[in-house]
Length: 216
Image 1 (cartoon, rainbow, N blue to C red):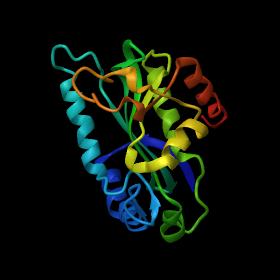
Image 2 (image 1 turned 90 degrees about the horizontal axis):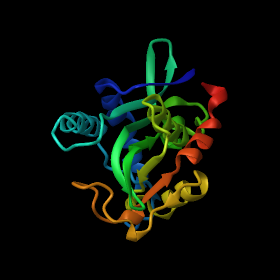
Image 3 (image 1 turned 135 degrees about the vertical axis):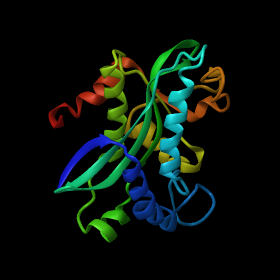
Image 4 (image 1 turned 90 degrees about the vertical axis):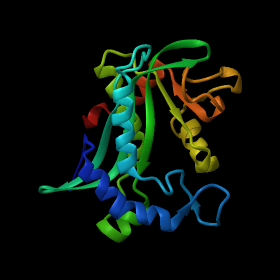
């Protein structure tokens, strides 16, 4: 099978929701709610997440909105014409936002899911593809670079993902956590809990992406 990144379609979002999401929901829980393993994306509906990108894109046309249009992508396993989604991403290559008092356009990783090990065991009958979540973060950085940005990136660590998710961003991706004193991320939405956000500077983002250059 071949691994590739493709634009997210309604069909791929529906495929994830019908095949992958039930496995996520049955094997995992939100932090603190059960003894099961923890994932932030329990209960997510990717067809709805895809619609949110369309809504965001419509709102960019309104006066006073300094952000640009978003995108949605999938990492897929392909066998012939069949594509199975193993990673899901929505992003905004240029979101106007505040980081440490500096307002500017930055890449924003919006929603991100990678297929759990149980999907490979139960549905694909093959070893898990490793590094999908980091590859999706790289997709956000590349989208920003493609649109003339420097790759500086912001993302939100959903508290429902617990300490494991925070450790992934801090230790696994070497991102910096915003201070509670950062203030609102954007003027209209994302006002609360700035310390739930992590970022990479432009130089750090480019160094992060350089790890994947050989695979492009």
